[in-house]
Image 1 (tube, one colour):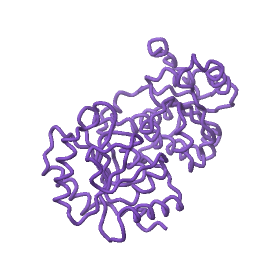
Image 2: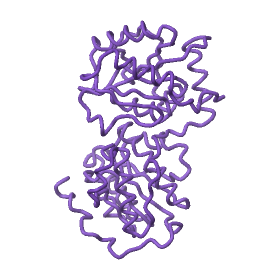
Image 3: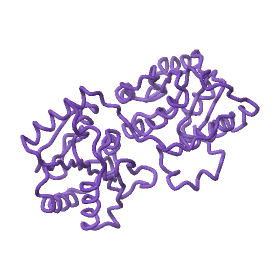
Image 4: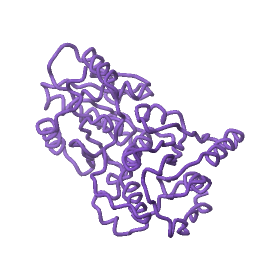
Length: 346
């Protein structure tokens, strides 16, 4: 499918087309047909970018799985989500309905997030949008930007460059962070849940997430050693663990644990912790999306592509790092990190 679709949109169909007034963009389709928590959270900066660029628009999201409506629950400009079945040929009627609905909507602009996504390119091509962006890099000079490789950022750099081809002034604004947009009620509830977990004390809280999928999951031996080290180094801190849906712990449940299948509930609790530590995973991106300083532990993933950013967050290569390196990073975050915007919620 990738070979069949890679050239879709390559001809410069927008050559000679100019966007006279950004207020004319009233319906936008953003295509990221992926079901994973992390990949959907990683498009929140692009959704914010589109909403800010076209303040009068409504945004539809072309996705997979059930998570997008939950993630974008408090995004006022996200109008609806269109869901591609995970197994199209077992849900052929539903699959056809998706493409018909895209074709029927009067989109002004269609945007593909990942240039390598076959379904994303097809959706943009299939739409009747006047302005179609397939996600391709048309200006190689953008790759010189130090953060261009990040999966949340290069779609925005490419999109901004595309807009300049339509006559829109180039934007140099700092790219927005991942954002779950928790409500005041959610934040208040998360604070109460954390207080019930740690008891009535004024200690600051370090949050661990010891799980990850596949080869990204660090061994029990690694986590046991790491947990012993930070427990000794940070005796005046609460240490808690957020558990995965599998309800497992790489440190044998030695610290107070929090379990939930509700990602917004999990995020609301993490939002009140002082630092989150975990391997590259959807939960790492969830922590980043609630503005908690996040230390992402990388062993096999592409760190430049997936590391958490903003609010003193950082990616760490565990193969090249020692315990002293971790302590320096954590000390810097705990002593110099930005004031948490959620600290007084509720």
